[in-house]
Image 1 (cartoon, rainbow, N blue to C red):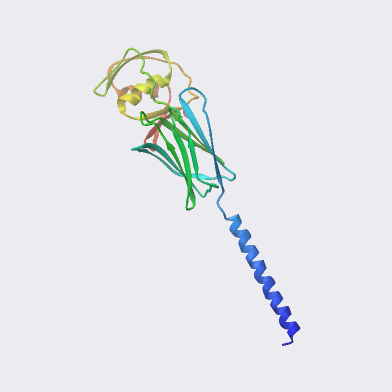
Image 2 (cartoon, rainbow, N blue to C red):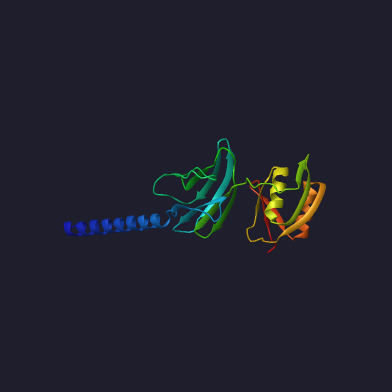
Length: 223
C-alpha cells in the first residue's frame, strides 16, 4: 500500500475516533444529573423558617426523615449535584444549621434542629424547587382546656383551627400541620371526651381531610 494511502487511512481512522469521543463526551454531559442550588429564606410569620432548594433542572426528593438524637431533618435529592459542600449557621429558634454534600448520584441536605424542641416541618415539591417550612410547635394551649389520660375538655369560641389541633397534637403525641389556607373560625365545647372522638367530630363538622405522611399528620380541605 502506498504511503500516501496509508496516511489517508490513518487520518480517516483518527477522525472517526475523535468524532466518536466527541459524541460520547456530549452524551455524557447530557446525562449528567442537574445541579441543585441550595438557598434559604425566612418564612412569613414569627414561628417558621423556610429553606428553599433550587436546581437548574427538575429534580425529585428521594426521601426525607427526622432523626431525634441529635434532632435533625434529612432530605435526599436524587440525580442532583452541588458545586461544593455547604455549611450555613442559622441560629434561629426553628433551625441552627444547614448542611449539604454530594453523595454518589444524590445530594444529602441536613437541617440541624434546636435541642430544646423539635419543630414541625412541611416539605413541598414544585418543578425545580423544594420548599421546607419549619414551624415552631410551642403554641400555647387555649384557656379552658384540660388534658387527662387521653381525654380532653375544650371550650373554644371563634378560635383558630390551629388552636384545636395544638391540643390534639399534645394529647396524641403527634406532629400535626394545618393547611394555612384554612381560615375558618372554630367554636366548640367538649367535656371529658377522647381526643380521637374530638378529632373525628371536628373533621366531620368542618369538612376537613387528614392524612399521615412520614409520621406527620396533614390537615387540609377536600379538593
